[in-house]
Length: 173
View 1 (cartoon, rainbow, N blue to C red):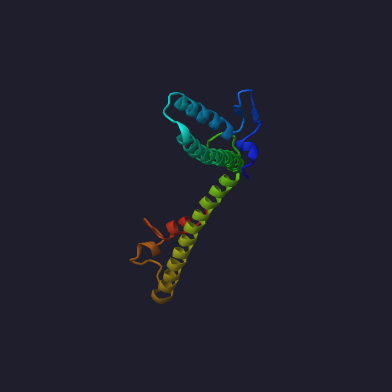
View 2: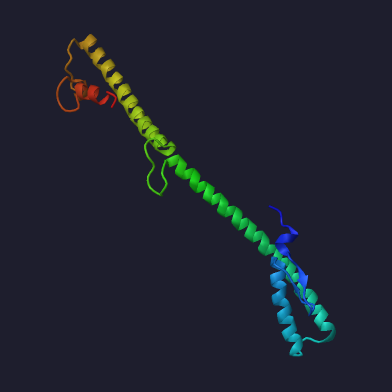
């Protein structure tokens, strides 16, 4: 958003005492500067050509500050609008209107469910590969030794950690 003259000076008018007034940021700041300048002049602290020098310096600084203030206000308003939109987007993705956990049917909830299921799939896949390795070893044992029972607990049909336990672990949940 660009700065316009209306942001800085608006509704400018001069009264019968030659006092300039307006409703822009620069106008409001200059009213204060002029009041201070008049007070210092009336107290005799600023006289002659010093008045023009001080006034010009104050005028330049006031223009600079009015522009900086206007830019900061516009930037702040834009950031506030952006944060409000971000909050709406976040609530829409979580299907909530308050700051609580997302529902399972929301974008965030479905992503969470997908991650959970993928983790289960990776575990199940690892168990399947381990079971295949055990069955291959068991098959080799049967074909070479002629017996199913071995000293390797995982290859035995009974006992803790046996092949039946491995088969149960390899089933999807």
